[in-house]
Length: 469
Image (cartoon, rainbow, N blue to C red):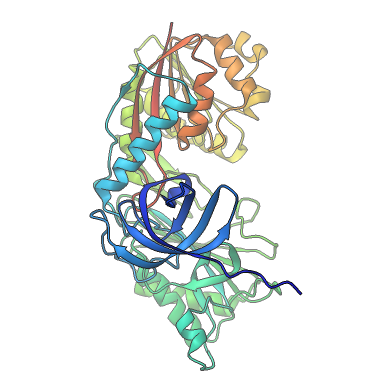
């Protein structure tokens, strides 16, 4: 039997940048690319290779030969194991530089645009504690650290409440702290874990699909009010009542507590019947005078302050007047649509999720906006020549599609609609650049503005303004 060669060690690899999904990039002396987990730009490292391909290596930092000037000490004790904040070891200034550079290069190289204004990235004031929604999972088979495995001791407590280990869906990291959501997020989660352990409540068994406690979601609004949502695999009325009452007695910040029984194979909540145990079952949010009702199934930007900045800049880019008809594609719950409606003559929002459209209509009524219309359907199927023929011509079009960008048919209909201005908001500047390249024969790219919604990660939003030629 042929023995496999041990994976090589690459010495003195200088990390010069960050690529897709924030992975660090270096090169060997021969010029072969090395993708390194755990390194930051400017580091010189020895790399233990995990995977060897014809064009690149993948590996982990074996030894930090020379630390980068941009390297900082991670704040969280779970850094490196938890897959959430992969850039905690990189200075925030460098994070912004890399994100800004990535967006600019995608627009230039993929989109083929040369002459446009690239505004400096809008960084976040809060680099930690910025998320208003967090979801945690229960498991009776927690992720064991190397220290625990090598100790030789039997691990008696295998219950965990925390995050899925990247690439290992059945294993959960038992979270001692998280720097993403402000207090009392950590305190609530730890109190739930302590109560469950002390009272012998069953944690979910992913492999055998059994147990009691399944997931925990914590949501807050900008006024400091909290929603707690439990997914339970089965009904245990006495146990859930004890747990819920315990939380309500100890955390006065909880405005509403809801739960759902979920015996399915997955944790998605959208097809579940959510029960209200305490409160109204929703939180109210306010953004520059607009009010929004946020329920357990609602989509709402998870970084409130940066979402506010994003909407303000979108409105600024659009320069809407009182005579303008505005189309808002992929409108979601109509947040951007209503944000611009106060300046416009008429707004038409389109979205594929029925619950989102129902929420958009409710919010428009709540905010006294009678110049908004919302339509539900798959964008490529509803946004057609027939639709355009039966509705007012758009002066301004705003589009905020998912990561995959817009379907080619949607781009084609935008060209048929021929609005004077297009404001393209995107969470993926690569697909944004691809889509805008299809518009460039008829439109000029005026300016772009990256917005950092997720500090400590590689994710970045971008706003682009195009004007019809």
